[in-house]
Amino acid sequence: MTRDQIKDAIVEIINDILPDGDCSQVNPDEKLRDQLDLDSMDFLDIVMELRKQYKVQIPEEDYPKLASLSSCIEYLEPRMKSL
Image (cartoon, rainbow, N blue to C red; front, top):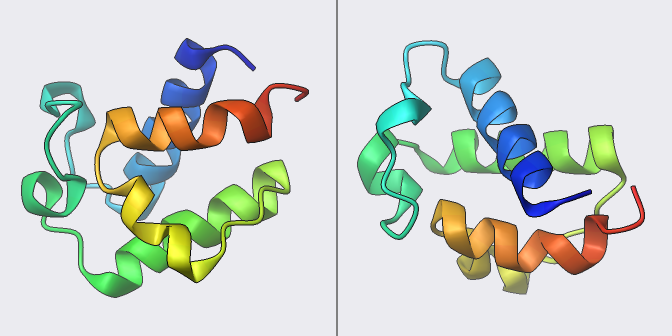
């Protein structure tokens, strides 16, 4: 997957979990939790959807690496490159 495809996948998952959330105005370098009012369960739902849809295993100690849209893409790019 390309960086743009990974970004689109993340945004789609977030929009499915937070139907009222608007990812179109998200600053890619700011924390998603602050911008979208994600709680810990929403965040876990995003991680679980990544696992379910793309077979990406994300250890709990790596969760801080998924704080912003940019950091999500950076973290996921090598793991989703072959998809």
